[in-house]
Image 1 (cartoon, rainbow, N blue to C red):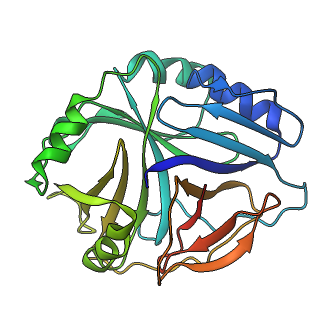
Image 2 (image 1 turned 45 degrees about the horizontal axis):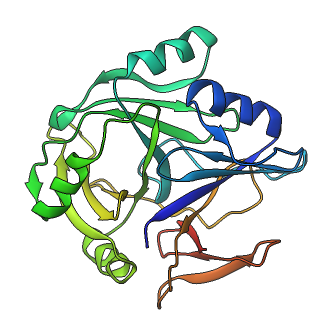
Length: 257
């Protein structure tokens, strides 16, 4: 059950659509309204929904030691053709374009409503290959002509229990990334389902819980295609179109098509 879309809340749908069309070359799926819009980002879609002006402030923090949702990642052919126009336009960056571990180049930036996004250039040389076939599948994907939805990242208290929770949904651990210079003790385990990835951040430093939150600006929930949720995913809300939104024990919100 791969990720098929992410649902993001916006204060101004037109402004958010313009951002994603301009800087990620996302393509509209049908007409946009003042209340919602759908955007194609190759390997999935972004569903934008408007929130009221008096919506509660988001409790999401930029510190990766806060458990639950961290960012949405996109693969690009090269960073600079995409990041330079954003820098010139004054888009707010969390991490400027730079070389990273495992032969990757990365950049982190915010959309107009505070959702953290990542661009990734290259395929990782994993510290530990856990599933060679899944790694080969990742490397076999075409180089995207525009940013391609690739992954959702979350911070967890325990990787092993999270892996077993997501395995029935089709996510298989296939590689790890190590960060020897990170004083927080960051370790990433990547889980793959079809052409989408769930990145699990684990730290030796203490992590802290974020209670599930809907109706604020920014990331709301990720959608899995055809998922049948098992024990451990707690229903927390029902959307206007009848989708049940569930929270995993780390606070990541999910729904199924």
